[in-house]
Image (cartoon, rainbow, N blue to C red):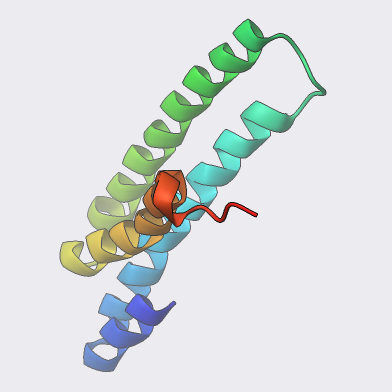
Length: 103
């Protein structure tokens, strides 16, 4: 939202592009979560397979969303990519061990 607000100061279409970029990542992460947690607990092999397929679906949704946002809607590419990066960076920090709280 902060990235979109920053770009919106320059131009409305740029702000919308940044918002759409972040929305694409949020939607793709939702697809991954639905794929992984749709059913109850299962075996490790099945969970691993769901994780692999879910990540493939996630990046497919991101690719299709970027295509629709930049090519079909004609929004500027730099704000869209900044929105994508702003939405992905917290996910990467969450994977790093030193950023996780150990209580």
